[in-house]
Length: 249
Image 1 (cartoon, rainbow, N blue to C red):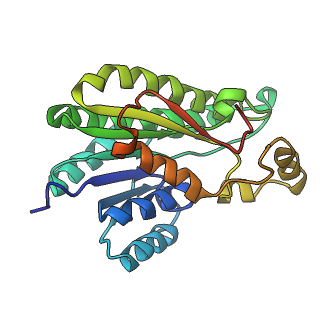
Image 2: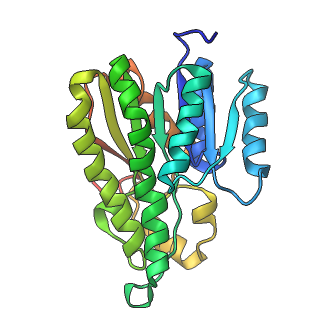
């Protein structure tokens, strides 16, 4: 039987990048950690599990298409059956299919909106009733600075991330009286696999716009996510916290 004081944390897109750093941050409190990913293979997820194991955390990983309502429902039923609850949900899964709108195909729009935005609905819907019943819970949705300011070639991505902001505020209003806090974190230009693939000229152009003059680190995003799930932020809900070095103020 699990210790009821030990929090169970579910992180989508948890195998690498920001998701991995969030998992490692929650390992400091010896939480039960469940990683959700949809990588072609298990190598990144296994690497994250090994890092957690090195910190004394027996985490688990599941390859699940989070854009599928039924697959997500089945996953969370399994998690609740194993741990009895979900205390923290971090909706971090995201993909890009960048191109100018006039060249964008319907499948590129649908793929990005389904993974980035519909998955947030799917996962939140799966946990919200159990959280309401327990009158406790923390939900953090990972948005993006481009959901606020837009970005050429990312109409689909920007729309999905802006949608997350509106979704966060609405759900926060719906469940605040039940002891559940719902917030979003909007990273800027962060050192991840996604940004590593950008051409050097594009990277330089972004850096010119950042007052702090550097890219952010995934660990810096993880610190804010963790704080939003702590007593230190107990009077915050429905907020979008920007972590972007001043790119957007």
